[in-house]
Image (cartoon, rainbow, N blue to C red; front, side, top):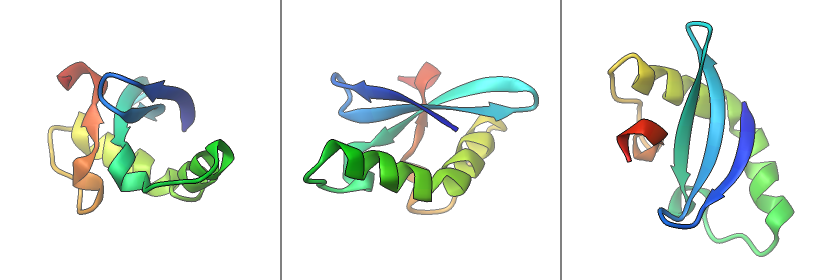
Length: 79
């Protein structure tokens, strides 16, 4: 999973993962990450949860709903 940055309009972190050999871009709401005092803390949190985030994005790309709390993620194309 690659972190692409923050999406100011949606207050979400933009990430990219692979699904069926194709890149899938998703948005992780800031509220899911929580209030972090430092920028690096966000990247550490994303790295610690990368497997679950990737699985959730793959689930969304397959047209299904991931388990909470990852059901808050959205595919970038949906926004």
